[in-house]
Length: 573
Image (cartoon, rainbow, N blue to C red; front, side):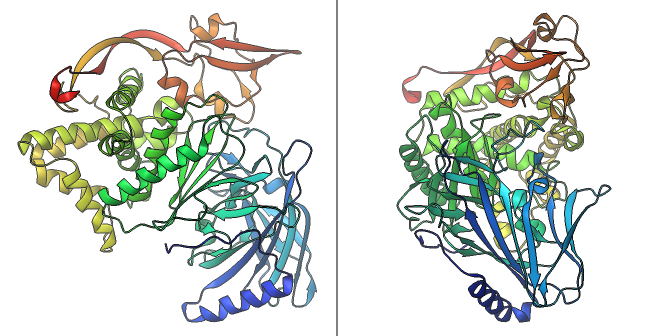
């Protein structure tokens, strides 16, 4: 993606200008049979709570002449409830005048949408305007990436797929994203995963265009404009840490990644915003990262989250149909390198490296479901945190094991880097990065032993690491740690109404007073709690007409768990 300069303020285009711009886009790409969408985002003013209460959307798109099925919005995207049911003031017109739209649904579809169909065949470009309220309501479906519309301190953000209607089509479109900050004024800024200010995407299907993240309004940003290496960051609200200093750290780390991965650089954006459900995490989206915080997010831990997600930008995923089934590769490598590359760059201490390593090992070795075969992960991913973390933890320990075997077999002359970097370069040559191709690489390096270790990992066999698996400066030890036990059926937490069932007798949840039939009123984060032996589960519960808070330590049996400690020798200090 090419580097793009900053365009300050919002671009204020009338409908006539947008139609002209759209026509030019269509004409310039006619040979490629590409269609075009021009979208203008116009947030409302700031209310008494310093929030933006709505965003007005204007969309102009080319449509096949005579077509009636026009637009769609997902009802749920990546376990996030969208704004599809909150559309207000919907109006449409084409070259023949006003156009009535009727909403419908596809209840039997794999991906469920709300659709809008025209009352008559359309003629010429279609212009649609509507308003989406921003409520800041918690996602009712529980654990999910930070994608829904949110507003704080005069800024707003959200994934295009959660609030912007797109054509009901599988054809490629070029999306032109414009900003109008008339109601905000001042230093309002708009940016997205496409870049800063007004930007146009490459030709993508509407399904692909849904994965465009947007942030606009009065937001903090660093640096003043995108750097020569393409880095830019922005944050909505006031984090509990020095956001500018953190983003300067992230920028330095990004530079070291460019060197390690031998990358020429590309546009890379970091978006930060508050999250009350699962703060401290985030999601990688299109050469960018959306990170989250709350009032208690520790900056040193968050650094490793940023390091993790930045790895995704350079590594990507395997070219497999089922992304979750192949996530052992992308997530495993991201966890493996999230601590190693910052350590090499001098951006974290050896103690921070060791702490992060032990968090991964503790969560994996105390996980009651760590023998779950990889092919069962997609179906159980969102329903159970103990399954959801396996691609991260097991994947990272698999790569650590693989690295140790390569180092030993080559007498220190080779490492995992020597497999990963050439493998990733295949993508630039137009090759597919498949699981089978990775197995071939590993087998070529280590023979049958390499293939067997991969097969064991995929089958769910517990990974056994040698004491010196992380180098001679660390050695393995054993520590008694307790398993994570929620205390009731974990699928309760991903239901629209969270009604407790399957309460485990004698569990901490039962001892805290919970009963089958109790309703949990707020979404609950688990991934971070599972990784923290001392973190308590805090629930807001209703039983009959009574509502109260419940807090308990979600832990069960004690199991001997592998951890690593630093070796106190001169060469390792």
